[in-house]
Length: 586
Image (cartoon, rainbow, N blue to C red; front, top):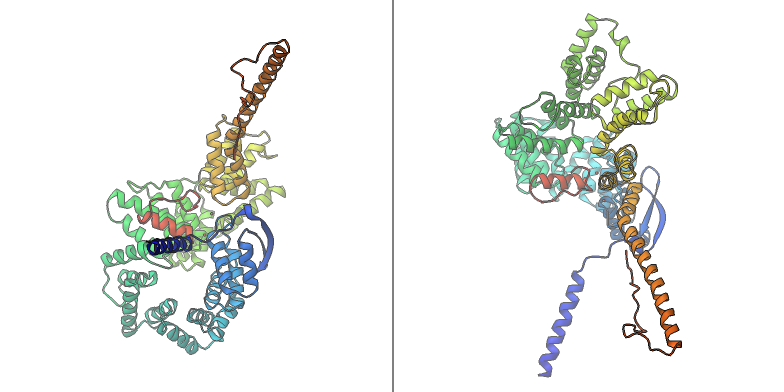
């Protein structure tokens, strides 16, 4: 019997140990201490804060443990409890991981340094990372990255780059096979090469590799190497967008485009959502197609004409020439904006520079009819990206040219740009000498709230405080919290701190109420005690309701740019039922 009990105890201990091993790793917590530090990320020594256990990971990384460097890179790429997601810090740890011996770290660092995902590029360092990963650490993904770096260099040997790609693909590296298939399909382009590429695309798509599905979608969409087939195009686009692994951006644009052409309203509206996600993800083609839906007033669509202008402008800012041309049409026809032939010309000129051939001839025709037209293009070029136009508008106003600054801001406001609404709203709310000599607070608040509704951080903070304190609007603390939550969800630390304070207000009020009750109870108790004491001294007993150990005084206690996009696509695809409010794509 004792032997059986001992065996059962051993089994129980093993189960407990296994359960302990299955528990998730400890996450960085601000409650467990912090340290301010910095690390070179290819552009600068990037300052950041490490919390709790992340400090130990950092120490191990700096001592040469590549796995801990990669752990920190992953934590800062996606966010881990109190560590805020920051790709600029993530790339720093990837560089360090490469330096201390991680081939995958070299490949990832090279890719980000090359593609600008961290907000900057460093092609020289990207090449160094890829070369170390490939030649020193024998990592095939790094060899693929090295081949890409070599292909971008005029002095590189294309045969050597092709050999690296072939070796990487033969070893099973997906990116190497993607590069090889792309070279066969687009660069060589003969029938035999395209047939080989199609087979590679098919194998990859079956393995849910997004690049394979994209290759098939484009092949059947354009009739390259196969007979054009829109049904197959739509099928491969849907498969790659909703189930693919890797870069799904263009696939989701194609999927959204297929949905809006399906003919029913549900598909149209679903397609709009996919196109919106792809546009926000940086695909100018998606912005252009969604802009045309809005501008054309497509029956059943949720995208408005004003939003159509917004999407076309975003597509143009992303250097998609057709979007610039379509935006120029809105200015030609006066769709939601004042007709302006000079603005039309400026946008056509940009479209022409972006190789949109029809725009070149259209612009030339305008100049032929009006040789002086280019002299009338506004001082702040309407073809510049919105951010640059607004910066120049502020500078113009500050230097005294209020007319130019105001005209630019108003024009972009009519394109429903939230930054322009915030800028113009501020000028109206506070006043702008020589333009709004008397502040127009009510009109300013309308524009600021329009910007806040679509996620403008500063505008959301402004409206959050306005509703919280009833400044210019009727006090509504629920609305105040909601607007502050919008700003906090975009990663603004100040808004997050204010939101925490707002949410704690009911606790503070409850505490104050309880504190007052405690003080009242204490005063009552003192009076009762004094009376009872006096009565005792007079020879009488304490009242039966009094217990020396009791007291009526109550005790009082109180008191997260690629993962988010993929999550949005998974939500639209039905793979997850929730799209988090902290996700700017949701």
